[in-house]
Image (cartoon, rainbow, N blue to C red; front, side, top):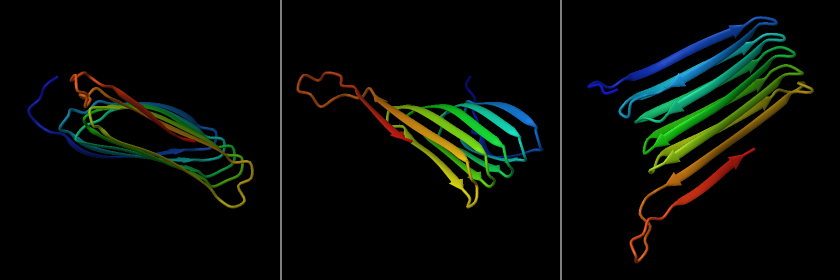
Amino acid sequence: GTRDWQLVQNLQLHVRLGAGASRTHLRVVEPHDDDQLAHHVHVKLARGAQYRQALIGEGSRYHLQRLLFDLEAEDASASVGTVLTASGMALDFQSYVRHLAPRTTSAVQALALARDRAQVVLNTHAHIAAGCDDANATNCTITVFWDDSRAGTDAGGTGRSLSVEAQI
């Protein structure tokens, strides 16, 4: 839809899961082109707690998604699957996982599809504290840039370029 106002939003979401608790969280973020969003999600997990998040989002003038997970006790686990798109817009995804106890597990997977000179940043960070034996952290980010801009050919044809960046 169309609207004649701009959304400026700084969202702070704090989740605390007690021992053995579980939460599945679907987040869909569809800003308008001129919107400016900063979403901060901080999740703390007790013994055996499980948090799963699926995030689907689009770019805008400014769009930040920052996730922080504290795996505070044994057998806590967190996972995130993210698909983000940006067409000529800005998008910044950041995740930080802190393994603060033994036998914790995390997985962060992020895919960004970008075109038309979009500015996209995907960062995933995992920290395993000293003494956290058997902690398991998996991070994977992939950014696909698809640009339909005119190529510099003599015939004036359309060129396409595809590049993939992966961090594992």
